Image 1 (cartoon, protein in one colour):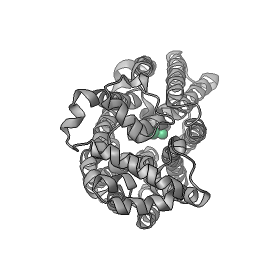
Image 2 (cartoon, protein in one colour):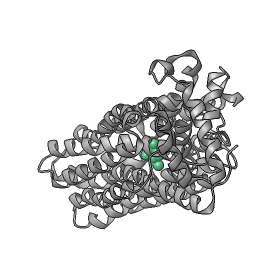
Image 3 (cartoon, rainbow, N blue to C red):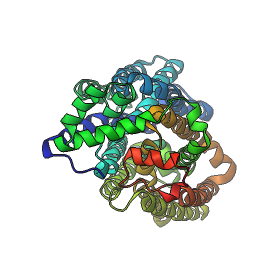
Image 4 (spheres, rainbow, N blue to C red):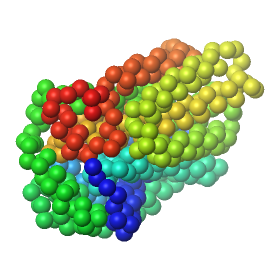
Length: 456
Ligand code: BGC
């Protein structure tokens, strides 16, 4: 078992985590900003419903591309260098969208920002997971999700601030600030010691461990990482081997579960849903979305405190149960005639309960478990497969939400997500391992021994 880092080392680990988590913050900002901006873009470019879905969905297409290329790049060039390149792409995407003369340009800029999001979405948790001491790994990786959810709230607030002037260009431009902080901060952080070992740079890995651990822990951790690395081939094919197939199924299954239970219909379309619920002005609908975003942050903070104590599985199961229940109520509110007055508030409260339930489990636990599941030599590429599944499902849900509402009605759509949440609960119950308190190398040997996930 690993051990608590010395205070100085521990400060450094928190500092390094905070810088990497700016990647999560940009992820959140860039996906949240569209919800307010779209109300004005739609008017300026006279967009049809289909075109509106494409503008909202373009960032997801980019994220999917980022998820595809990010894994190979993270394993080859290292997590830190890739994150630095990502910060530059974030900045380009922000400026590009802000200056867009027409809708085609805007879509391209959003795809570029999306590539950065797709990469940062999993390389930031991956990097944090690899530098974290085992006892607080859950907490540190969850800081990325806290940053992500805060990024969403900040984007809503920025949207609100610029809504009066219809200044959607400024809404996008503001992402340049965190992108700059992210890029400059990354220059000062070390490479992941685990990645360094996987590339044969053992001395450099030791030098990093000396900075982020108690001196007496360094040798033990280094030899453990080396032992793990020695057993690996580093080929893609390893992932399809019978021993690791289950790890792949868990990652991909959880990735899809995180999206097809509907969270992003709320994140992207919150103001639209509030308008459905009877809030008529755009500015008020955007402001009400800030409430949703704040609930998301608060419950993610709670998860961060609990995740290394209670464990990943209990949070996940409670989270999915809460989501199912609140979707059921939300559907009922929309099914009753005349959604206004008290019923409008029931809809708002169940939307909040739904987001809170997601935030305390499925939100942070997915990215954490994904960063813990795979062997070092193929970790980047394996995470990238889970991430592709996540962004792919995200894209499908986002582009079909308004169509689903049209076809099945609002109540039917939320009940559909509720039904899927029940399926996700069963999947999590049967297959998601408890990784709390296990070193990444212990998790790896568990798969290699051919054991069932729940025996971990
Ligand atoms: C998900 C995102 C979602 C966010 C909301 C993340 O864990 O991957 O798709 O928008 O949580 O907080």
